[in-house]
Length: 245
Image 1: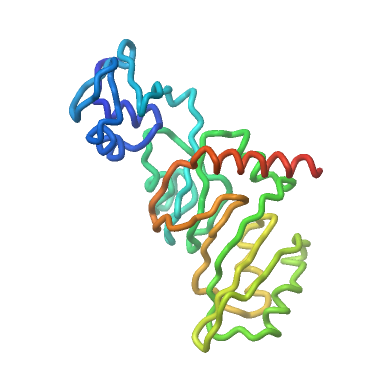
Image 2: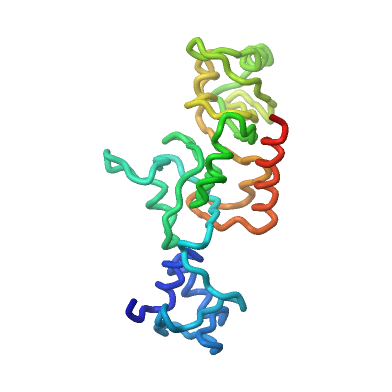
C-alpha cells in the first residue's frame, strides 16, 4: 500500500471517521514512529508504527467495532436500498463496514447497535436471546386507563402469539400520551401492530435502550463507539440469557 494521509488510514482501520481523526490529530493524540503527528502527515501502513493515545492502531480486519447510533426517522435500517432512500450505512462513516443489529422501521428512531461482530449480532437477534428493548412511544390524544389495559392484554398479532411485554404510562394530556414499552422479542413492527389492534395512533416511536445500553443524550443522527464498560455489560447480558435456557 502506498503512503496515505493519517486520517484516512485511521478511518480504514475502523477506529473513527476521517473528520474525527483530524480532530484527534490536532489534539496531539496520534504518534507516528514515536513522534506526535500533525495534520497532513502521510504514513506507510506497511512500515510506520501508528499509535492512538499510546495504543497501537489495529487493522480493521482484526478489530471488532461496536457503534451506537441514534437513528433518525426516515432512515432505512439496511446497508443499501433499492428505492434510493437514505440508509444507516450513509449515516455511519467510520471507514469500516458495520451492520445493524436488528431493525428499526423507517418511521422509528433511536438506539441502533451496529457492529462487525457477527457472533454477538446472532446472540442478540436470536429469539432465545431475551435482550430487552425499551421504547418511548408518543400516542395521539389522551389515552385512558381502559385503553392502556387493553394494550397490556394483547397476546396475539395476526394469529401469532407474542411474548409478554411491559407497558408503563409516563405522561398524558389532552393532546398526547407518552408510554414506555419494554419487549423481550422483536417481531416486525410489533409495537405499532399492538397499538393498531387497540385503535390508538402512534405519533413518535423511539428506542431508548437495548439491554444495558442507554441512548442517553446522544443526538439524532449522531453515533459513537461503545465504551469498555458498556460492551462488557452487553456481553454479560447475552451470556446470562444463554445460561437461563
